[in-house]
Length: 199
Image (cartoon, rainbow, N blue to C red; front, side):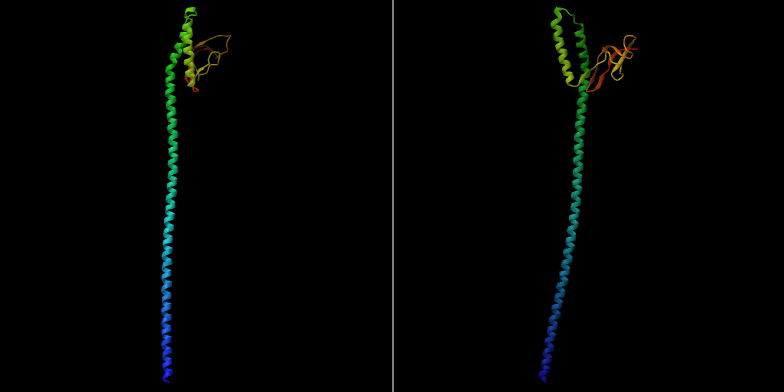
């Protein structure tokens, strides 16, 4: 009987040892699962943190791209504005210069009109005509054009009436004589023609 008791005790010890081993294995497994859950949780936390960081960086990138596009558009507008401003200043300077040259053109015309048609003055007249034509050619290259007045209807935008006459043979409100030529520069009137108008 003692052997039976011994066997039972041995079996009990073995079962206890097995139970302890199983309990230890279960505890180890539970511990491992807990650690694994903790690692997963930490990994998810890091992933979430990285995703937030990526979203933040993408938002910053989008903001910088928008800022760059805005600055590029502003710079383009500035360049266009500066080019327009330069063009306007050049146009204004050209206009001022050409207006200052109109009396010289008038004097050349008067000189040509007052040179006698005598043989001895012919070379002088031809020389002045060449200068006059070249001068007009240069001015027209920059956009100067004469206002055609005589025989045309009086136009306040183009003409300045300095006298009125009454001539039954000519239509009313028509320019009959021009005292000083008018000019346009690139389509803009820079000097009105001084004219005599029929009533």
